[in-house]
Length: 54
Image 1: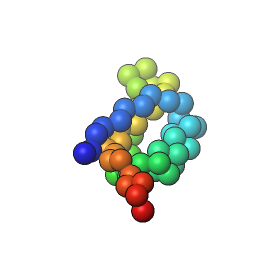
Image 2: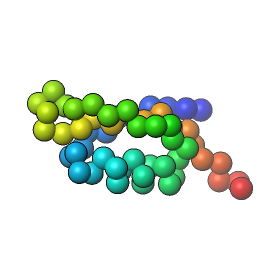
Image 3: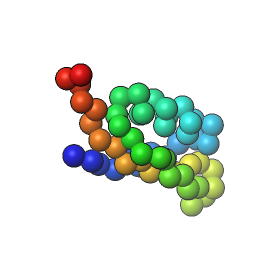
Image 4: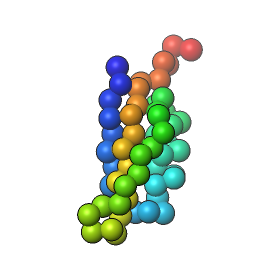
């Protein structure tokens, strides 16, 4: 079952957050957009639970 994650974060944290999510979930590429005020970044990531039986 896939789901979407939206995160609003500082620009400098976007890569670290994306990498951390990829370690625990199966993720697609992160789509990044500036927030309306331009001060932060919006991350949109499609993810799926990782199979823990392996």
